[in-house]
Image (cartoon, rainbow, N blue to C red; front, side, top):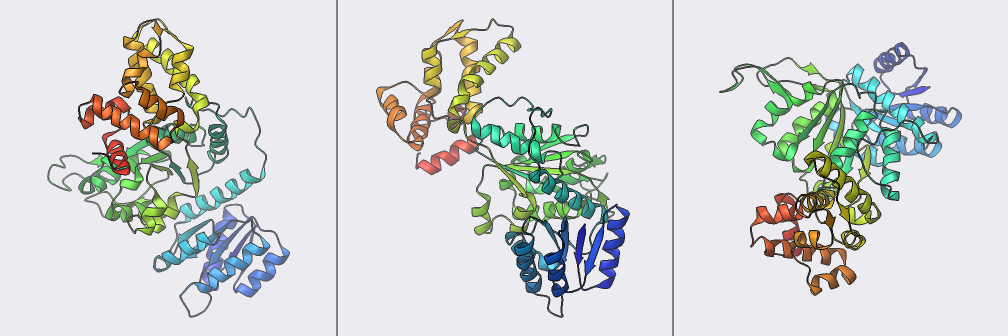
Length: 443
């Protein structure tokens, strides 16, 4: 049963009619006191709660009611109903335990989707996870405990429409996790659209994401669909969302909130039905504190947060990954599968890997192509910029930061200071290399 709490009788009637038509049982009250009496006596599946119950528009009554409601029903998801002017307060409500917030006037379809997602997710958390459920990894290799626990979470949340934020360093496989969410979801037969927001300029953002009409600007010789329209009924993966500037964040927030957008050159909004998965290697909470990332957007995209471990945090998976990449490279190039010495494998498990899985794959591919049929330690050593006693000492006893700094220093030395070549040696992007240089004060 769903409880509606709102002092406006028209809103209570409208919501009740909408939910009953969708097959839900509904209860409704008009005041906080009545609501508290209800939640003391009756267990609800979900609560829709307004934030103002008097002439005041501060929303403090709603926050207080939310906190009291959570005392009696801590596991019941609460969706706050607010106006655009109260978005900051709605964010405070989510910090206090609310599941989500919707704005007035709401979109009926979007509201029903949010309710269905909240109920499904809440139910999934209560039920034990069964083994052998047909979960598809989508090519993800590894048996490390941290990775397995993350994949179990993916299995639980994939069938819902909950927005997901994937955090992790470059090269850890965030795109593969996003794909695993999609192929295990109800949207698996519809598009999976990937967008690298770090590569979309501010001037092209609207055209790229929302499309444009013919003649919308100079050079628009034909109408073009944007990424959101292409992803309709499916999943859109927004990678590097931490690189999005503030003006584009506002435009993105509207689509995620209302599920509508306007192509450039058109004035009629279009509806879109999508599941949103975002990823970044940036520290979004710090960016929110620095006011370089919108707080309301942050809380909109991170209902579920997945922290993807770096390769150095799952070293027990390195032998599996090495053998997988060796087979993959040999098959794709028509080569016989080479042998790798135990010494080489043991040495590979001790490297710092600032470029994570992408760096390891790059090293294995080069070794298979040029190292012959017997891959010893020497087949890989040159790819990390040498094998000096000093670097061995760091690998054996130094911190992870020490090892990463040494690997970068050696790569820069091998590349004669050429940033593009050094980033290729490390298997990372130039942007990641610049960040590491800044972190360690290297020039």
